[in-house]
Amino acid sequence: MKINAKMKSMLATYLRAGVASVIALYLAGVTDPKALATAGIAAIAGPLLKALDPKATEFGRGSK
Image (cartoon, rainbow, N blue to C red; front, top):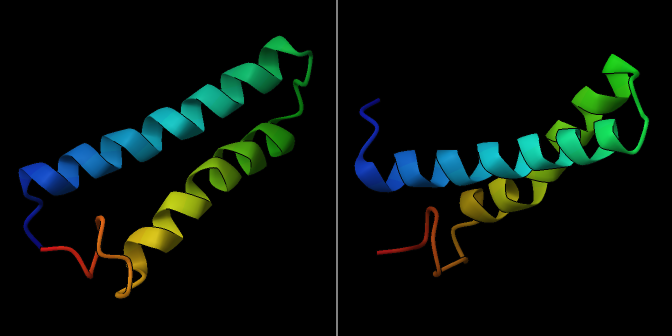
């Protein structure tokens, strides 16, 4: 699968959201690696699910 510029931009956005969530938890004093990993996954779950939705026309599978 070839990754185009739009896909790279979307992936970078998801990665930034995940990293920001992990940093926020860490700064709040949470140091449990499992909790930090879970926060990172949860941060990207929403945008990822929307990207996979063919009815979402803003971006993702249903976009032009």
